[in-house]
Length: 128
Image (cartoon, rainbow, N blue to C red; front, side):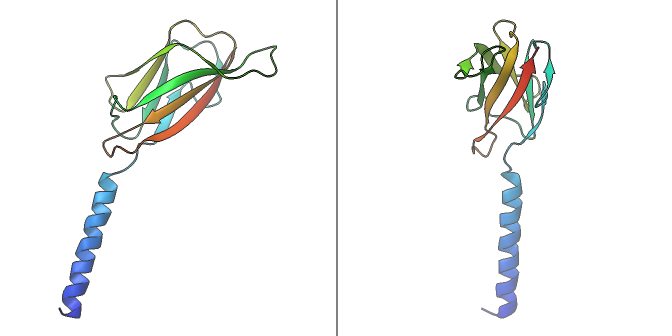
């Protein structure tokens, strides 16, 4: 095979791999409500907005209370909450079963998009 044909084939192959890599992007957390580090009243729901459509059956979140006023050290406590999608397939909604009491909370999330590679992270906020 000639050098030119080999170079053309290599360029075509690398372009194809680059294009398929772009199509396989992982979801990224773009924003949340409440925002990371926010302080305020108890939110009725927590929304996580991602860069990709989520596969809801493989995505999820846990709401944990990580700090309580007057208690300097305690293990994180799970907080009952419903995790669901929304009308926007890029948004995950966490709805606590009851209003959150004063303290520090963390949402530990797992997002899976069409590439099926799970991405995890967390956001922390305070309720006054």
